[in-house]
Image (cartoon, rainbow, N blue to C red; front, side, top):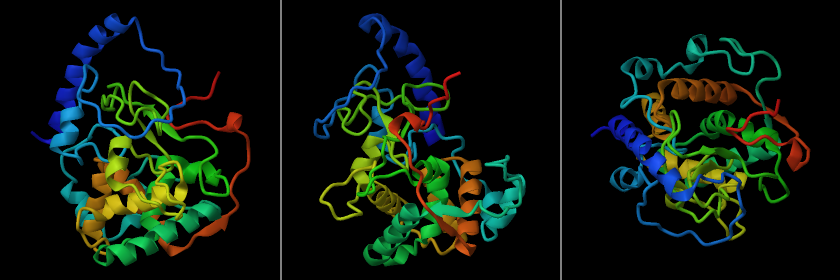
Length: 297
């Protein structure tokens, strides 16, 4: 069964299971409660619709728990991968960009630029055949979290507030993944969520985690650790990412979506041609809007 078929089957199964789960529990409280337990492995439960999927094919969902939009990267995209600058004409407007870049849009917070470059240097030493360029990490970081929400991190590189994706409860376009980390990273002991600037689900992070800043911890909410982990994931496919087709395939492993691949490659190409380091943003936790949340009206 293909990854997309697994995803569709899992969504259908979730639709049948969730009413029973809600009836049995009297509803689910989605308020996050900080957890500090060690990473644990839980057997599949009523809500763990995709637990088996992870065991069968750890790459079927990519990094963040989104359901695959397609089973394979399109042949047309692969044929055009050697010139990603052309992808801008086919992308929806993104941050006001519609095909052309204007001054100021190639800025990256200095701390994030440092993290991307150090992660690429690390992979050059540990996996030299991968040939990962920092700009590919930057393209992913822009799409996944806006470069950690404008580089809002503390002195260690930890985000000032956890960057959380949607609750992975089987909603439209997302998998149903029962909690696998005891709330350690996402503060949710019912369902998993993608976490950090590179948006890892906890179970994927467990397989590709890295200590990018040398503090003895591997934390997906730390920009140095997260970017190094993303590098591990991109290089795990065994491709030479200096080759345009292999680079596109690596990004597709990260998120099974042609549009995602085009967008990441477009920005990676732009960053590789020139980038402007910028200061990180400042602000309190109250100013911060996690991924998947909406501004109050």
